[in-house]
Picture 1 (cartoon, rainbow, N blue to C red):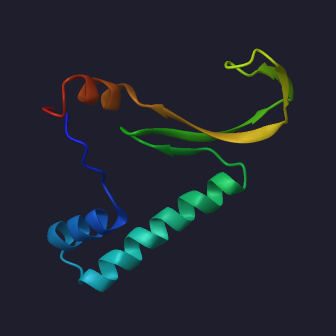
Picture 2: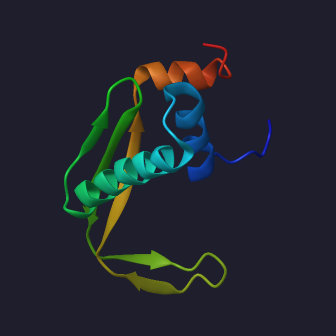
Length: 100
């Protein structure tokens, strides 16, 4: 497996090549989409992208955790976490190694 990371610039370049917008317009489009996703998630909304997956925010309650090194109990404060649940199509594609 490669250690390549897909970046905003990679996404902008793909939009530039495949859609035909200018590089600047492509970068603005990618930024706009990411901003809309971020705003929706920050507002507690669920973001569902068909054939890709669902991003959602979960509230986790306070609990007592344990330091694995020392065994000491440590309080864990309540927090909001971002979760991603891939679609079945995405799961199948990842399992096939991107050949699909």
